[in-house]
Image (cartoon, rainbow, N blue to C red; front, top):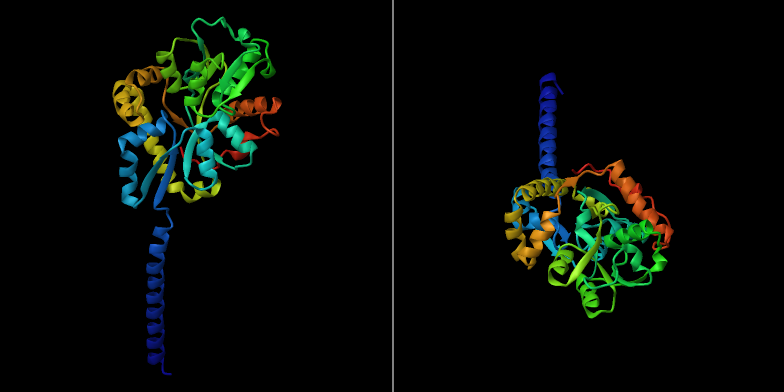
Length: 326
């Protein structure tokens, strides 16, 4: 082969290699674009920050350019959200602090992704206005409707401790839904009921009751956002958008309490007066996980372990996601 033919051959091979490389990149590009999940399934409960974002419709608009559809699934409580996350029925969801401990103790393996701002006024224990129960100390020997593993249970544990009582000094009546709690309370089957907003606010306005105590001084009453670690990693891009929009929705809610009530009342099917009471004692916010938050949640876990409410102690920090999403 002469020199000129050799150069032409090299030139042709270079062109072929370049064409093949371009074709490979072209073929890979759609595959890479398609690697981002095209759906984000969100589990939520009544009266929480996700409700606000859902009502605005801004998450759908923010994810639309990426071709991602949003599916909202409502649940009666955090236990149901945790179960749905575990079986892959949803991708991300929120639940109260105590649910986080119980799901870890049961080996569900959900990771904490982010935390909400403290909300100690959003839970409490109600007694009939005419009840002889005037202090936490008077709860000794009484039947109390409570959710096992609910945030209000931890507040009650701490309140009993502060009064020199223990968990065995009361008779817990474990129920699941807020409706069951209120029904047991109104029927007189229990002496007191532990509730959380908006159901606490509804019972305060709709029954002849007194608030014996709320969470102040006993619990921060945080809500957390959870996901399976593999799901969080796969959904990372979508979760970043979710939390960015959630922060904006929270800021708007704090500055617009009346419009917030107007937005949520029809969505939740809750009396505006109930929402107004619950909203005025809440500061909305989404915060990153921190050592301080881990320590606070660990105290909750240790309390449950000491009372054998969970089978063994847990190390909360082990399930704090390494993804920085907030």
